[in-house]
Length: 92
Image 1 (cartoon, helix red, strand yellow):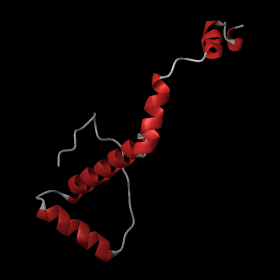
Image 2 (image 1 turned 180 degrees about the horizontal axis):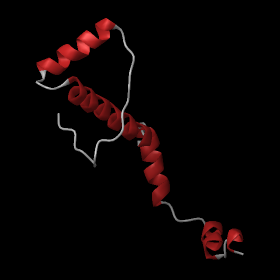
Image 3 (image 1 turned 45 degrees about the horizontal axis):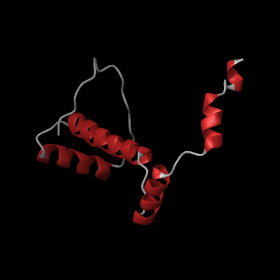
Image 4 (image 1 turned 90 degrees about the vertical axis):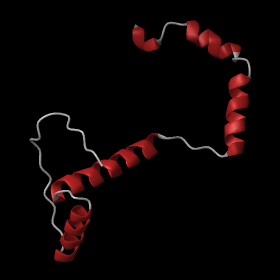
């Protein structure tokens, strides 16, 4: 698992853990031929990316998606069209 560098490595994260947790991390890193830092950074970044993507995703049931698509296909309400042509109140 590659961890692309976005510049000089000047920041640190220090973590406290039990001896057993450290042993497991060291074993996993060794199994992958990586240093503990390389392996840990790769795992943390993969997890961070996954959580960021998940938090930005909108998930709809099939029924909700079908309703959403149907609404997009309907004509735009004339009241909304009129509002779009007005100068916004914050522009004054």
